[in-house]
Length: 208
Length: 208
Image (tube, each protein chain N blue to C red):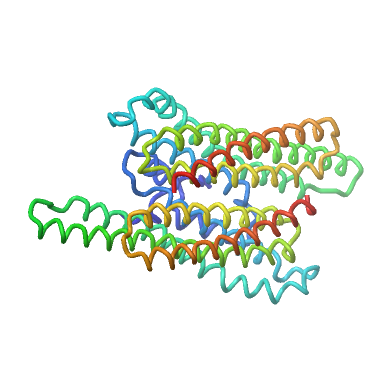
C-alpha cells in the first residue's frame, strides 16, 4: 500500500485499525513532512516582500532545502511501515528445527536493526527541521510566525516519537556495539532538537 | 476544497504553497486526528487479548471515544482553513467611505473571533486526547506503547500550536471580555495538557 497516495481521511482510518502498521513511526515521519511544508510556506510568504528584504537570502535557502526534507520525511513514512512488515515476516518464520530457529533469530535481528534505522533517519531529519524552523520564526514573515512555531513544535514531537521507536527496537537487538552507538546518536540528536525547540518557543512567547 | 479528501502527498504540497491557508491551525487539527487514531489502534490491539483482560473496560471506552474525537479533529482541519478565508474576505472589503470602513472593521472582528474560536475547539480536543493517551500508555498493549506515547506527544504539540493560533488572533480583537475569557481558558487547557504529557513522558522513560 502506497501510504502517501491515501487520502487524509483514509490514512487516519488505516492508522486507527487493529493492524500495528502504519503506527507511531510513520506518524512521526508525516508530522515531520507537515513541519517541513510549513517552513516552505513561510519562506514562500517572505521572499519577494520588500519589508523582509534582509531575510530573502536565508529564506531562499529554506525554499531549496525544505522540499527535499519534506520528500525525505514522506519516504520515511512509507519505509517505517515497510520495515515493520519485514520484522513481522521474520517473526512468522518456522521454528521447528535448530536450523530454522537460528535462521529466524538472524532475520529477526536484521528486522529489528532495520526497524531502528528508519526512525533514526526520521530523528536526523527532525534535527534538520529544527534548523530550518528557527530562522523561519526569527526572520520570516511575521504574519506567519505561528506556522514557523508549529514547525518547531512538530520537529520536537516527531523527534521524540522517532526516539521512542528507535529505543523499543534497540531493546531487542543483541549487537551491543550497534545498540551503544545508536543510543549515543539518539541522545545527541534529541539534545540538538530540544535546544532548537526551546529557542523557538521563547521567540514565540515574545511574538504573541 | 475538501482537505480530508486530498491525498497525503497533495495536502503536504498544498501546505507548502505560498497561500497562507491551510497553515499551522489545520496542521494542529490533523496532528490531533493522528493522535486520536493512534489511541484507537492501541485500544483495538488490547481488547480481546487475555493478558490485558483488566484493561478491556477502559480500552472499550477508548474504542468508542477516540473515533468521535478523530472526526472532530478532521472537522477542525477543514474549519480552520475556512475561518481564515472568512477573515481574508473581510480584509479585502472596500474601505472608501466611513460606512464601508465601519462594516469592514465589524466583519474583520467577527472573522478574528471565528479564527480564534476554531483553534480553541482544537485545544479542547487536545485536552481530551491527552486524557485518552494516558490510560493507553498505562494499561494498553505493551507492544504498542510507543504508539500511545506518540499520541501524548501529539496532544502537546497540537495543543501548543492551537494556542499560538488563538493568541495571534486575540491580538487583533477589541472585545476585551472575549480576549480575557479566552486567554483564561487557553491557560487552563494548556496546563491540563502539559500535566498529562509529562505523566506520559515519564511512563515512556520507564517503559523504554
